[in-house]
Structure formats: C-alpha cells, structure tokens
Image 1 (cartoon, rainbow, N blue to C red):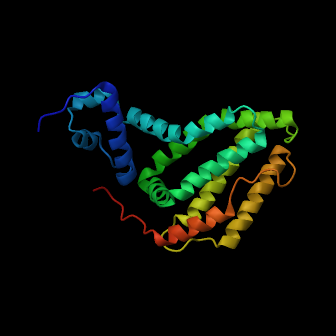
Image 2: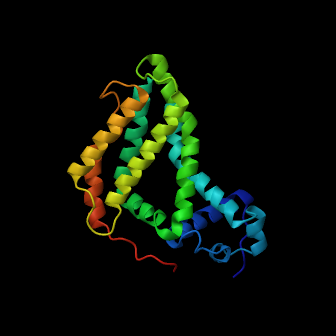
Image 3: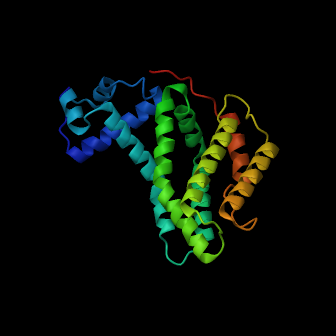
Amino acid sequence: MARVSKAAEERQVELLGIAERMFLERGYDETPVQAIIDAAGIAKGTFYHHYPSKSALLDAVLGRMNGRILGGIIGVVHAPGLDAVTKFGHIFSRTGQFKTEHRAVFIQMHRALRAEANAALYSRMVREGAALMLPLVAQLVEQGVREGVFDTPYPRQSARQLLQLSTAMGNLVGDAVLTDGEPTLSIAELEAEVAAYHDAVHRLLGAAPGTLQLYDVAQLRLWLESAASIPAPSGGPA
C-alpha cells in the first residue's frame, strides 16, 4: 500500500491519536514503537522525524490529555467578576458533570489507565496534571484570602496540599467504583468519605464549614450504579 504524504501537524495529531489509543488498550510498556508505525502506515524515519523517542511521544500524549482537562479550567480561573468560591464550584461541578454524563467512557478509560501495564503512564499523568493545576489552584486560594473567605498564610502550600487531598480522594473513589464486580464501598461509606474530605479542605483553607462543596454525592451514586453494570476489559495486547 502506498504511503500517504501528510502535513507535519496533521501527521503529529494522527500519531498522538494512535499512541493514546494503543497506550490505553495495551499499556505503555507493551506498545512498541513499531506497532504505532504500522498502524499509521509510515516509515520508521517519518516517526522519528516527529518524535525522537517513545518517551517524547508519551510526553506529547500526556500533554494532550491534560490539555483537554485544563482547557475549561483556565477560562474559569481567569473569568472576571467571579469570586473564588464560585470559581471553585464551577471547576468541580463542570468537571464532575462532564465526566458523569460520559461516565461509561471514563470508567473504561480509567480502568485501562489503572491497569498494571499502565502504572508508569498513570503515575506521570497524575503528577504532570497536578503540576499544571498548582498555579491555577494557588491563584484561586490567593483570591479567596483577599476576599476574606479563606484564611491561610500559605496559599501556594495550601493549594498543593489541596491537590494532594483531591488526588487521594479521587483514588479512593476510583478504587471503589473501578474494581471488578460490585463496588467495594457502599454509598453511605462514600458519603462519609466525602464529608471527611470536605472537612479537611475547609480546615486547610481556613474556610467556614459549608463554604465549598466540591464533590456531589448524587453523581457518586450514578458512578456506583454504572460501574457495577460495565464489565472490566479482558486486557492484554491485541
């Protein structure tokens, strides 16, 4: 089959799409560069012209994944006329609503990401996503301090710890709903975890109780119901 010549940007986007799909389906370590080359129908030299290494390709894939998540958040953080509490609410509610509406896809995607073969990919995605989020969350905390709704002399450090708390909470929810078979936590247990998380966030930021509601328990119920009905992937390279 004759190879098709494409513009550099178009080829890069195509390679990113193929790599992202294969990394999720097979695992990063189980996806050789040659498999991506074969799927794209290009010469090996063409691949290395765009990406000097598999690691460089991974960096680009992670950048695109995190970019999709951060795109809407940046607009909210910089929106004029919104107070810090409203911005926090918009970020968490919009993200949560979007993921809930597309939860079947997200459940399958995160099951793939959390598979043992994708441990390196998942770890880097979380770490790099947190690094991108830190200045945005710190900006919101600083705004809240100026507005008098937060009380902390360490806004940047508090922002980092808030992200760590949120990552831990996300892992706990993920462990509960992404397991094979029935969820490992009941809705009552998850509600208690959410309450504890909110309590810790308010103490960390020096906010009055009830100021922030970052997790929606009604959405968690939908995730629990959906996860129980979506079978786990069979796994393994094709």
